[in-house]
Length: 264
Ligand code: GTP
Image 1 (cartoon, helix red, strand yellow):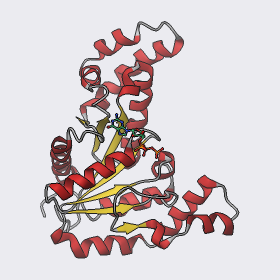
Image 2 (cartoon, protein in one colour; image 1 turned 30 degrees about the vertical axis):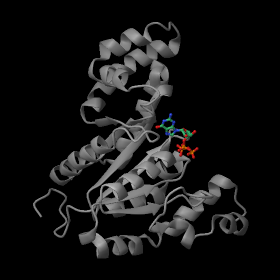
Image 3 (spheres, helix red, strand yellow; image 1 turned 90 degrees about the vertical axis):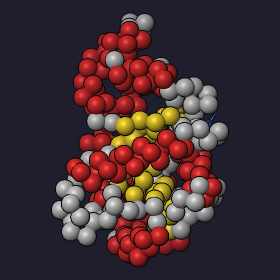
């Protein structure tokens, strides 16, 4: 393999897609849609669920943290609250993650994508040691990308948009993996405004200037800072409900995987 990642046996397939998003962004619905799309289009997918606390998943997973770690028992045994329970469950699972990687490696020739669902409390995955261990285990074995799910209608407000982009930026810096801004719910609000704001900071500043508050001034200054961040990003508009944008999503994933092979 001629990629820059330095691992001699690094494969081009499967591509790992780690799906993260703020609560309510539509992550679960989108996972469901992506899984359905792979079935319809005969794309060879594999599904990993890393959320120990989810009660029911609307789609079938091939590897499920809940089969190994019982979240409620972890809470009881270690006398933890809900977030501590999720974190400790992930820590326990991370110690066995080499087995997950081996399982995927054994099937690598028959797989195009591995879709990875993460806990609803995004920071538990993005800011924990176990989240970092799991991400690195994937990324040192397969091309790995992060799909950051954005609630598009909620982001029409410039200040909310900026907060969301800063969070995405922090994930990019933390994981150092190709990040795909996945603008969800485009059936409710098209993501054109976001593309314009990302391409032209003056357009964003004009939108933000209608609000004279302190945060608006800060928002305008930050838009200059984020200009460089946007240059390194790929984005796509999707609707988990209508199914719009699925082909485009997988195209962007492929482009990001190529970028991974060239850069990492
Ligand atoms: P948590 O389970 O809290 O982490 O939320 P989540 O990010 O997994 O979101 P979920 O999939 O539960 O969706 C949240 C709400 O958004 C639900 O009411 C969904 O029906 C709705 N939703 C998700 N995707 C879309 C979409 O593409 N379009 C529309 N109109 N609604 C959506």
